[in-house]
Length: 365
Image (tube, rainbow, N blue to C red; front, side, top):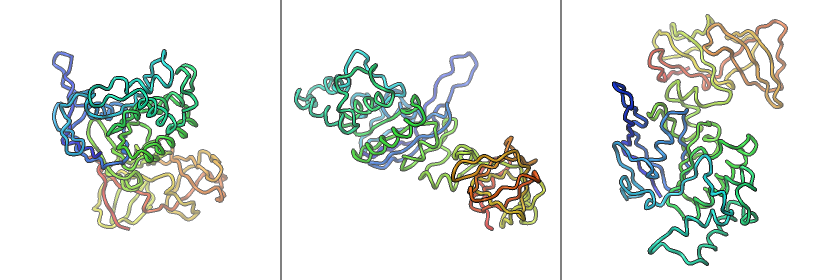
């Protein structure tokens, strides 16, 4: 099911006398292709959950339209939209068994949608097998692990065979190892069912690992939309560049003079077609090449060995961040005796941004 958002806006009135209204979502337009998994990504307060709640009907838009396929569902009640919603806290009924929790949405169907007991039970068992909890149907939620409870919540959302599946930060209550396992399961389930899925998270690694497309939001405004790797490799502005990536991008004060980019006095890269100006420079941690004759120097703080990679923690007088972190192969021998480390820079891992607007500045090398 294709989902189309047209100039979607949500404004919350200010409750304080003389205060301004809060624009939670501002003019969001986007078409989510049929059968794709799209991640809504951004920090707390960016409007991603509000967008999700407008799509499912729990919140009414202040402006704009929502379409499921060709159907305008903007004013349609939530129960008639054909959506499955998985909440952050699972919201399972503690007094019911797993089977009863999954069955519950089917028991509330009325009219033409009403199913026989045999059909309801059959569908419950099928969806339980899909999420691999068919051996837990007689347990209560209190007898399940966090990951198992999450699967029950997903099964309950899927059992209605929704047109659209909505996931609101479904992994935030799980530990790191379980998060990894569960997000892989969500991707498998989505691909097997082919249901159009919208996944809300503040964790960029989650969004990038399982999404077909990501939408990066800030203060209710969409910053960039695209395939995860494309957004990472080609950020539209400094916010997107800083939000995506682990470890985060290194940010420096820089200056372009005569076609050369200077950082902290070091002429680190020739950049064509950029007029002389102050700029903000972003360099991904993997964009540094250990080079004893390299044009860029930093002061070493320490070296962290991480198996196949080495993380060098250093400082630079032009750095906006407290430290500069580079990721290089563990095959490199880092000489810490001088206290100085020199790098060459990979041009495709370096980005220039306008000093005032923080918008991306294109350049050629």
